[in-house]
Image 1: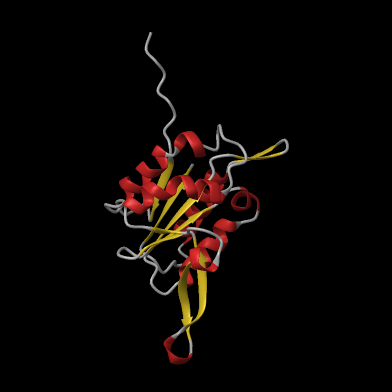
Image 2: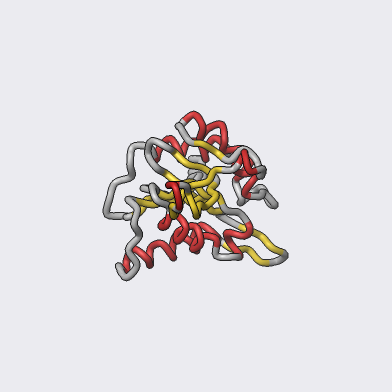
Length: 181
């Protein structure tokens, strides 16, 4: 009797869908796949974005990413948005990770991402970061709150599909890698 094919993990989609995924995408997808036992939201409930980022850290650092080390000022990663007097960053946003050579912003969302529209916030904020060329947006495949299950990845995928299909909102970066974990 043939065995059933397991569901793919992680789910991912690169945007715009008219463009092939860049060469860095398989490495990032592999980092999520390696972290599957600890972060797969279909079987691990209550995983926070900080916990998921901690598990992903080693695999992403090997790929050249700077990853938030802690919630202290020295452990955070800040990217400039506006510059002020003497060329200093007057407005900067904190991000979960950044690849300084490829200018990739990384954001990992968990419960708040599903319930609080953090995906929209991440899209807008990354659009304002001065040197952001790409956004990697990690969203839970499933988020459970009480008896409710929110399919965060699917919801965000549908929203990004609508953004690119409508062409009314032009995003100022080269692409988005949406990863469902």
